[in-house]
Length: 188
Figure: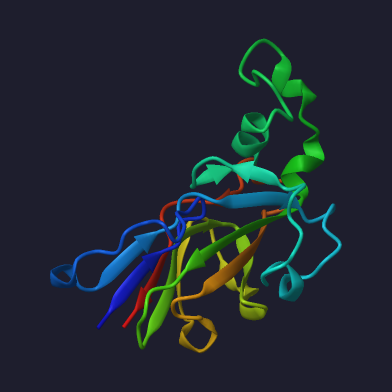
């Protein structure tokens, strides 16, 4: 049986219902339960960030994915009313030059084959699942380019899985950054 878990960076979590058996492949969109942190403030690497038990309590909550870093920081109260007057001037210019970590957990349905899809990441990324590097920033590159990975060996069916994505901007040239569009994990 093929199952699709849509991991939208700004994704849903394990409480997102599976599609009925008649609608194979099944798909879960992960649009909630994401957190964000600047890579300059996180001392850990992807192997540690992408496992259960990693302490992310001080990370910025993401209300809904997809979202840009600036949008997330405004929603968390770091910046207020950015589009009023000269408030945008309060945003440090190096914000657009930093790498950022996105992290979520989800429960994978039973299946034999799993594919993780990212329909759009801007600009480069490392993808980590359950402590294992799935792809590096040479494999995941491009403005909102789609990427697909067979993650069958690393998925824990029926259990809590942890996904970490380190998004890197095109230094100083890109003002919007992060993950966009629904991402998907397929299970067969």
